[in-house]
Image (cartoon, rainbow, N blue to C red; front, top):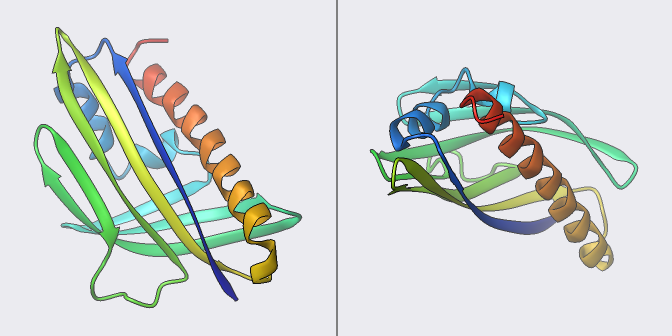
Length: 154
């Protein structure tokens, strides 16, 4: 197994107020309906266990479960990182959401890094990390579309 890493940053301004965006991003029952491949989240306070269904990647289907330490600084920041009690996870995800009021709307910025152990050789790093980035990009597009629909903006 080799560990591969990819990251993605994006930002957009939506017409919904920050409290509506915050409510969506902090709802562990709603997030799987907005996020492709996310089957469910088991939330226990700031410890969230994310269950990801099989994601197609270079002819294989990769699924995982990982535990995150969530940090909520309402109303402007949500951060997440591998839970300190779970240091040896196959999948590790770190990142932040930043919310800023813009008029009556919200500027939402997302920064995410995914690191995962996969059954590919190190020599395939460029291709594998490119494929992970492409999957992340597609998931981001679908998440954005679903979030806008949930907020009534589409």
